[in-house]
Amino acid sequence: EEMHQLGAHAFATQHRWAQDVRFVLNLESMGAGGREFVFRCGSSDVAGALGGSTALRGSVLAEELFSAVLWRAARTDYAEFLRALPNPPRGVDVAFIDDGWAYHTSKDKYVFEDSAATEGAALLEMLRGVDALEADAPPGAGA
Image (tube, rainbow, N blue to C red; front, side, top):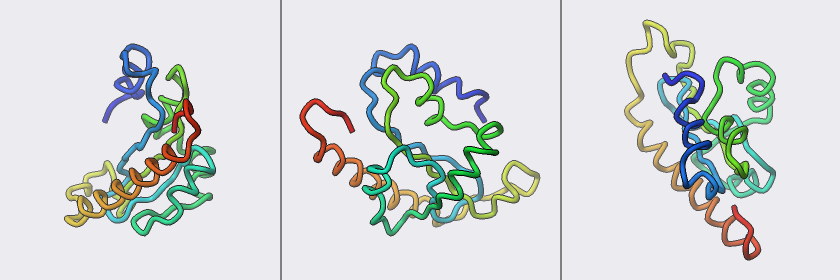
């Protein structure tokens, strides 16, 4: 595990591409696999773009819980990008959560075999949703 999102911070503050970031799809793991769970969504238009997904699931409660309690212990690269990029991007935090009770314990020994396939399907749907946001944006506006 990376402490304090040093890689995200370095990118956001030192990389020449940092000023061009318009959207972040942050893939996390808080368990051994399963379907992806959206636990932070940056804006209502992003939620709308991802709302028709068959691969994703999410909950307003998850975002509230993460924001109120878990963010101190489990910061994400997206959170660091929101804090440190010159133009804070829209985006989404997504994680595996099945068998989360074993995550980072001695029982954390496997990843569900089908997780790569479901993550690939979810990623493709998210990219299509983001692409639709970009297509709908007025000229000069970033998605």
